Image 1 (cartoon, rainbow, N blue to C red):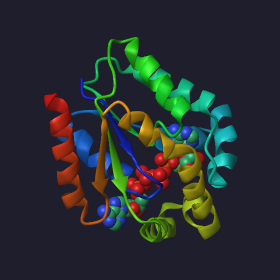
Image 2: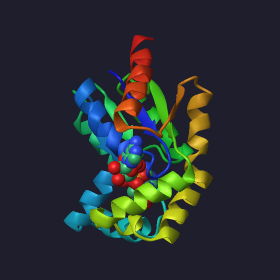
Image 3: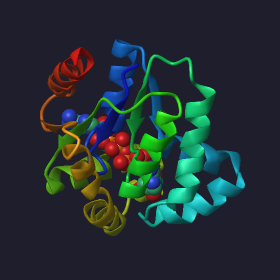
Length: 193
Ligand code: B4P
């Protein structure tokens, strides 16, 4: 199994890179943002709770996210491994992920963190907002809130993996292909340990 956490602020390229990596490495893409948007679309109770928080640029409560991810991991035990995209976003989520994988004698091989300056993040998200229909990509104040939420609650997750010597920082500015090459090199290194 090869289990990777793809990490970075909103707009860093996590979703974009995950799509390429799952094909290349035959892994399962588990994006909590995509799952939540699916729940919103389906009009479930979870989706209703999540929508107002997502539209405001706030994180959805840990207990809802952890339960949701646990179900996906349980349902896909035959996968070759996972790319966790947008998860974990808090230290509590990172601890819960280790606990759930340990039930299957498994764990995280490494975290790849995409590093992108704030101005570039804002530009990318506003550009996506022109076509995505996502309320959280259209308003500069909401984007600012998402970046603040990242700095306050999510950035500390990097230290969680750094302490375990599983952290790989990657420059996330450049062409999508160039960045993909750098991530692939980090993943190949993780797979060979
Ligand atoms: P996500 O769906 O994870 O939102 P995101 O961070 O905006 O996506 P991503 O980072 O994948 O987008 P990408 O850079 O690829 O979460 C949305 C919301 O859901 C959160 O705010 C929160 O409310 C909730 N949520 C999700 N997970 C949660 C959790 N675990 N706990 C609590 N709440 C949670 O793409 C951005 C744009 O950049 C694209 O248009 C892309 O084309 C462009 N781009 C990508 N790479 C580029 C490059 N190299 N150069 C130029 N442009 C590039």
